[in-house]
Length: 164
Image (cartoon, rainbow, N blue to C red; front, side):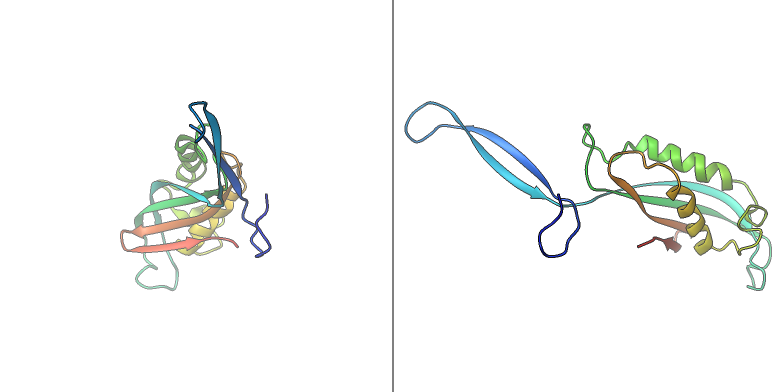
């Protein structure tokens, strides 16, 4: 259900809790109802590691052949949970990232793989390409969407891509 008049479009769900209580007039039990409105978003993330080489022409010293052990992290947002209390199964998200990203880029020379045969294989462009690949795949889980992709060249340098 849409939010109130404040312009929010975030879905709202009601969590209904019942509890048994004794009425003040005697031992007979009755149900009391508590309703809580929830409008939060769950974020799930999985990652894979890639060992890949590349060359960045015109950008010394990166214009020489070199490689990285990249960490690719993908983030999905979910407005609800399934019947098991999950936005998606981590196993399914890991399999998706492995199949669509790891298998394509691991132990490869990025400059030889489209679109990096015509676009510099920077961390920024790799993040955008991974986002484009994952965006085209069905999201495992209900009411989810791909939110962000991060590509880490090492423990201290990261490029991220998201669409609004």
